[in-house]
Length: 258
Image (tube, rainbow, N blue to C red):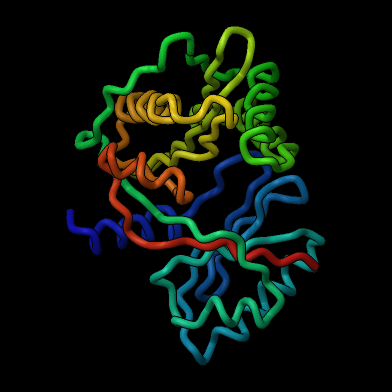
């Protein structure tokens, strides 16, 4: 499949065709916008839009009014091929704050280099309940320097209510969690998404991230998925390219806080 066709498939299955993926989550289509609503403790935001210059301002204002009315912060997840071309500037003018740009990368599982094993002294443990979730959250805070309370709540809810749609794994050095990652399995699509892969600073550069990607890829393949999708930060992109992932476009979170 060529890059244009693959990007169109991604848009169709995961963005325009987005569906509820957790307890209490709603997905709504209003005009040419698809949005996710998950309450105060979940991720809320616009996942797809097909706007033109004439209708963009009204659509942006409608989403601000909707989420502000719910009393929640939300994100407009903007991709490099979204239209109109100046949508990012329009979002900034409306009060959104852009976060660091990421690269949308997709790999066909059967074509990836998945022979990476954990380095000596590291074991990978599946996360199935609260104890494992706490380890994932601990790594997240150390690796990214951000609060992990929402991650903890959402992962616990998924593992409890829809365990077949999420895979989480933590890399342990003895009793110390040093890296962790999760994977979202989207029923009815050909895609599984890799999220949250992070390693504490003192353990980076040893191949743990590669091992976590390979582990999740094998699980996805066993469950019948064809593609892996990643929103990659700059430090992850070279590793993923060496594994066989292809960069397709950029994606930038635009955050609105009322």
